[in-house]
Length: 159
Image (cartoon, rainbow, N blue to C red):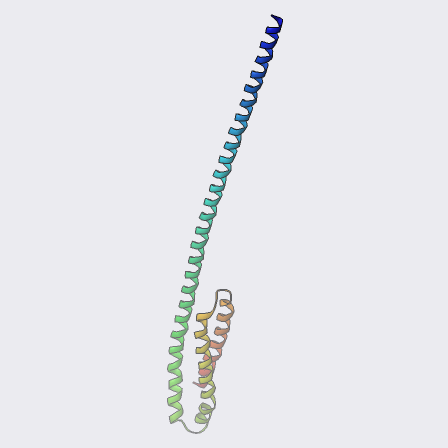
């Protein structure tokens, strides 16, 4: 009987050991599955955040480009209007040159070719604004403003 009790106790211990071993293995598997699921969710959330940030950045870039193009077009329009007004003055000087005599004719003959060259250079540089990037816009605009001031001054002196 002691033998029978001893073997029954031993069997119970072995079966309990197997049951106890299976349960922690299952718990660890559940933990691993849960951790994997959390990692997938975190990765998906991170990807969604990246996509949202990229979409916002693309929207901001498009708005900045639109603003720059509008600024460039407004500036070009303003300078074209100024140039039209200045061309009228140059045409008046050309007419005055044809009818002038003496010192006035000599002064106009001396100044008009330089004025025409300055005007042509200004127009060439104004057309080049189409190829100006936002990075170089401020410098290109400043240079064109200086050219404009010099051209306008030369016409006003000859006028």
